[in-house]
Length: 157
Image 1 (spheres, rainbow, N blue to C red):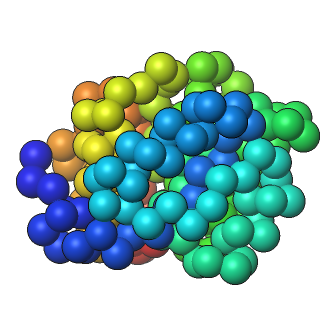
Image 2 (image 1 turned 45 degrees about the vertical axis):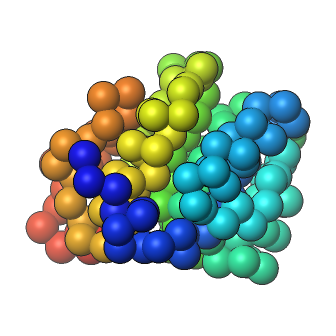
């Protein structure tokens, strides 16, 4: 897969990580920074995530479903997509907790994840944001059902 991040976006993609396990959040941040992303912040709950989105206008968010304030990941995802135009990917050990409609998220990656998966997901999300292209999704990314049968008037984020 061609890296859109390195070839087209040139590291200008801003990412927020919404994860309540500090070690995992920092590991994810390091992988993203190593790949050339600008991580604008780490959030452990819904208010922090929404504050970061309002302040930094990220392009992409990795969101855990179960946060410090409960099962608020889906609400965070919905808010990020609807009000901030962020491409969201859930990262969770409990995919059964993701709502049926995926709250507007592009998909889900089950924990644990590896650096190759993360890079492939970043490239996929960048491609989707630029062109709406959902072909060749990463192997470990379970696409949201709404992407498989999108309405004809869907536009990239």
